[in-house]
Length: 377
Image (cartoon, rainbow, N blue to C red; front, side, top):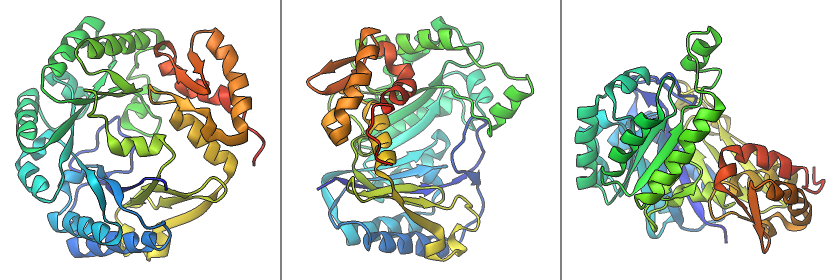
C-alpha cells in the first residue's frame, strides 16, 4: 500500500517576498472558526476518496504557516489523526520565519516535532534584497531557539544572488554548516515572471546570475556540504544521514498525499486510476466556497502520471528505479544511453542516477527521457 501524507497550505504572510511564486496573500485578520471548518471539511471529503491508512507525515507549508491561528492548526491536526491515524514515528513539520520565534514553544505543543525555518541568508544586505523581515542577529537567535525546542530543524537558504561572489558564498556556507542543523534546503535564486523580481528583470532593473557562474556555485555547495557531513540526497536538500525529510520523499516516490488549503495539490490511486486534486488559489474567498468548489478532482492520464514519476524520481541522489515505469522502462533506458555517454547519468541494473554534473540539468534530462515513454495518452 502506498504511503500517505498530508500537506496543509496556509497562504498568509506578513510580507510578500519578491522572489516568491507560491500561493500567498498579505496577512490579515481571519475568522479561525471559518477556516477550521473549511479545512476540516476538506479533510473529511478527502477521507472518502483516499484508501484509509495512517499518515506517514503531516506538513504545514505556505505562505507562513507559523502565523496560522493555533485553534485552526489544532483542529486540523486532530481531525487528520481521527480520520487517518499516524504511523509510528510520523514526521510532523511546520514552516516558520525567524520573526516567529515567540511562537516556537506553542507550535511544539501542538505536536510539531520538526521545524523548517526560512532564514535565506546570514548577510543583512542580502536579507534586505530578498525582502525578509528579519536581520542576521534575529535569525541566529531564532535558529538557536529552534534547535532547543524542536527534535529536528531544517534551515532554508538562497544563494547565487546577483553580485554574490563565490568566495562570499563559500564563507557563508561554512557558517551555515556550523549552525547545528542536521538538514539544509539550499536553493539557487530562481526568478519567475510573475514575481516582483521577475517584473524587475523585465524592466532591466535586475540582472540574475548567468548559468555558468551559477553552476560553479552549485558545485561548491555540493563539495562543502559533503565535506561537512551534510551530503546532498536530492537536488536542493542536504542532511546528515538518517535525517532526510520524510514528507518530501512522498512526492518523489510516487506515494499518495492529501492537499488542503489554497493552491494545495494532492495525488491518489494506482497507475491505471491515478487522480489529482487541486485547491483553488483565491485565499480570501477560500473558506466561503462550498467544499466541492474548493477542491477539484481530475483523472490523471497514465502518460501524465509517468511524467511525474520520471521527473520526481530523478531528483533524489539514489536515482530512479525504472521498474516503476512499467512497460515504458525499456524505452526510457534506451534514451538514457546517450546521456550516460555524455557523463550526465549512470545506468545500473535498471536504476538511472543523475550524476552531480547533471543535477542542474535534471529538468532537461527528464524531458529527454520522456521521449522514451510508451504512448499511453
